[in-house]
Image (cartoon, rainbow, N blue to C red):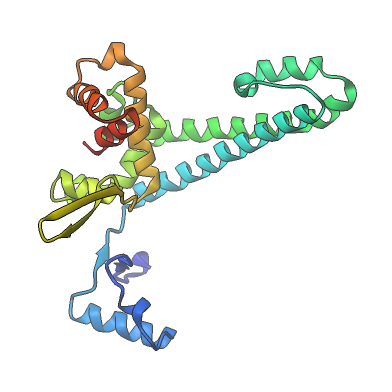
Amino acid sequence: MEKNGFEVTVVNTLRFKVINLSTKKTDKNDAKTLAEFLSRDILPESHLCSAESEGLRRILKTRSLMVEDAVALKNQAHAVLLAYGTITKVAQFQSGKERSRILNSLPDNIAMVIRPIFETIEVVESQRKVLETRLRQITANDNQVKLLLTIPGIGIVNACTIRAYIDDIDRFQDYKHFSAYCGLVPWVQASNDTIHYGRITKRGPQELRTALVQCVVAMVRMEDKTSDFVLMRQYQKLKEEKSSGKAIIATARK
C-alpha cells in the first residue's frame, strides 16, 4: 500500500481495547472507531519495520519452520526404531554420516521405513543451510550484524534475528523500554505500599526474546572467552542469589 502512495498505520492492539470491549462489534463500527481515533491522533500505533527487516524476518521464519520439521522427523525416526526394539540416543541423528551408518546397520524391513525419513531430513537440512547462506549474503554489509557477530556466543542466525526485530534501536527511549518490548520484564502489581513482581510478560516478538536468551546461554558455555564480560560477572552474581534459569533471563534483559 505504501508503494501506491497510501500512508499505513499499524494499530497496537495491546493498547487499543476499545474495539474488543464494544457491544456493537461489526466491521462498519470497527472501521468508524479506528477512523475517529486516527482523526484525533490518539490511535496507539505499532512500529512498521523497514523492508530490509521484513525480508530478514521472512527468511528467519522459513528457516525456523525447517528446524521444527527436522526435529519432528528425527523424533519420528526415534519412535519407529523404538517400536522395533531399538533404542537410540537424541544426538545420534544429528549428522548425515551417523544417519547413514545407522541406516546401513538396519534390517531391510526397518530400513525401508527409516530411509524416506532420513532422506527427507537431508533435504530439509540442506535447504536450511541455503537460507543461512542467504542470511550471510544479504547482511554482508550490515554494520549492526557485523557488530553483533563480534560478540562471542552470537552466530549469524541470532545476529540477524536481533537485527530484524529491533529494526531501529533509536525508536526506544531507553533500555527499559527495549526490555519491555522484548517481554523480558516482570509483571508488576502495586497496591498501597505493596509491590508484587510476577513472571516476565512475554509480550513482543518471541523470536527476539528467544534469540537474546540463546545468546546468554551460549556466552555461559563459552566461559573461557566471556568470563571478563561485565554481563557474565553479573550473571554469576545473580546465579548465586537466585537460580541459573532466572539469572539467564535477568542477564538477557540487560
